[in-house]
Every structure is written in structure tokens, then in C-alpha cells.
Length: 322
Ligand SMILES: NC(=O)c1ccc[n+]([C@@H]2O[C@H](COP(=O)([O-])OP(=O)(O)OC[C@H]3O[C@@H](n4cnc5c(N)ncnc54)[C@H](O)[C@@H]3O)[C@@H](O)[C@H]2O)c1
Image (cartoon, rainbow, N blue to C red; front, side, top):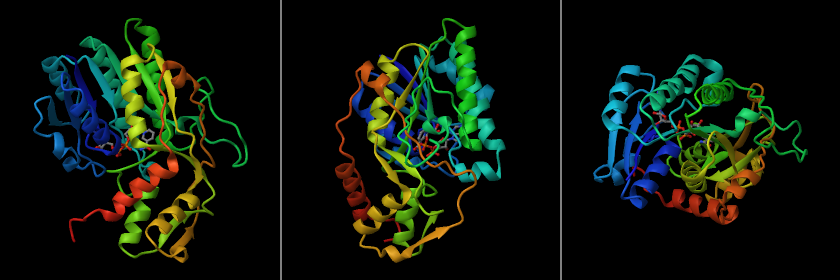
């Protein structure tokens, strides 16, 4: 039996992760800490709320005293940190919460993990730390050893947490951490300020769909299920103090994604409106995943089928107002 602390578990990826592991690892115990910011939805966790191997605690990872008491009481074996401020647009407007949660919050969790002899600390990081491939037509993909060059405040805060971990691992030889750099996830529970849920929400409201610039920016789309499986795999089998890219190599432009959604929902493409581009908008993200495959993780998911299945579910979803 192992005990896990999963932070940010009422958000998009954390909730998908918990629903899977709580059901499938009945011998393990899971405690979720979440501050319940605007991006959280506690009802995502309804199916597991009464499971004997699950407990929810409302809390802020930056609250040192609360976290100290929790670590002392629960004696975690593993800590998986999903808690973060994640909106790139918001990070340009108000940077403080990003550095508070995404950097200081990580420091709090890391120090307590060492203090209470956690076996492994896992940090959910992002492909955005690499910054952009320098042209849309370039076939460059980033390796884990490439030098990060984050280009927005959100990505910068995620990179600073990584740097803190790298130094901490060097200074405290017994401390064990892993880092995953995931590409853009899609799937259930994502907050509606992100491209896919934002587009679906606009369609449901019969409104215009806004797309930054000319929509040609390319993202590497990853099923949230694959991401959660890969993170679970890295926590269990990853090498000490290593970084792993997670991607399914599904490179599509924002406009292609939006048009696919319109097509699925039979919504006219004329409703797509191009708006002033985001500041320093990264052109393209792309990563190599040789290291994760060498570790033994492989995914079979076919993007076209999987994305269509997800859109079908969204189309058939009963909304609270209906
Ligand atoms: N969504 C993606 O495509 C993607 C890709 C790569 C990496 N990531 C990383 O994965 C993690 C999860 O992303 P997500 O999309 O699920 O984010 P999200 O915004 O949907 O959820 C974040 C969760 O963290 C909680 N939280 C925020 N500040 C907190 C604090 N101070 N204390 C406790 N809880 C707090 C929020 O309430 C929310 O439930 C993040 O670290 C993000 O950087 C996400």
C-alpha cells in the first residue's frame, strides 16, 4: 500500500488522473489537495468522493502550516503536483499568482517532501518551457536536453519550478523527483478558457468563435488519458531526477482543430472570427518522446478516432440548464 498526495486534483488533468488511479489502484490511498480556484470543479471528483481509498482536502499548496500538518499526519509515499495557475492569457495580465503557486508552491511541497521522506516527488510541467519552434514549417522537435526558452509568464513560472527542482536534487542527493513535460491536452473537464472547450462553449451559445491571429499556430494535441497514464508510469518506473517529454505527435493548427469541432457540431465556419494575435504567441510546439518510449511507455491512441469520440461525448452531453 502506498499513499499519494495529488495536488490540483479538482482541475482538468488532476481530476482525470484521480478518477483513473483511485478506481484502478484500490490498494493505494489518495489524498487530493486543491484550493478550488476558478479552474476547479469539485463535482469532477463525485464518482470517487466516497471511495475508501480517497480523501479530499481543500487547501492552498502555498499555505506552509496547513501543508506541514497534512504531510506530518498523512506520511505520503508519493507527491504528484498538478496544482498550478495555467492560463497563458491571464499570466500576461497578472503575474503574481503564477509565481506564487507555480514556483513558491512547488518549493513548499518539495521541502516538505524531503522533510517527511517522500519516496518521489513528481512535477507536472509543460512543453511550453521549450518555447516555440522558430517556424511553422520547421521539422525541429525538442529533446529533454534542449535548452528551455519560455516565452510567456506562465511558461516562465513552470520553468522556474523545474530549475528549483534541478538545484534541489543536486544539493540533496537522496531527494528523488521526476518531471513530465506534456503537450496540449484535450478531454473532459477542461476549463472553458482553453481553445477546445472555449470553441464548444461558443457553439453551444450560438456565438462567434474567436481564433488568435490567422489560426496557423501549431499545437501538439495529447489525449488527457494518455497524459495521465504516462504520468502514472513515470511516477512508478521513471529514473530518479529525470525529465520526460509526453506527446502523441498530433501536430495540428488551431484553425484545423476549430474547423474539426465546427464540422462535428454542424456549425457554420463563417462563425469563426480572427482576432488580434496573442502577445509573443508561440508558433509551434513539438517534442521528441524517445526517452519515454525507452522507459517502456507506449500509446496506441489514434488521434482522429479519439478526438472524434471526445467531441461526440461533448455533443451528447446534457448541460445543467437543459
Ligand atoms: N492542460 C494542459 O494541456 C497541460 C499541458 C502541460 C502541462 N500541464 C500542467 O498540468 C498541470 C494541471 O493542468 P490543468 O490543465 O489540469 O490545470 P487546471 O487549471 O485545469 O487545474 C489546476 C488546478 O490547480 C488548483 N490550484 C491552483 N492553485 C492552487 C494552489 N495554490 N493550491 C492548491 N491548488 C491550486 C486549481 O484549483 C485547479 O483545480 C499544471 O501544472 C499544468 O501546468 C497542463
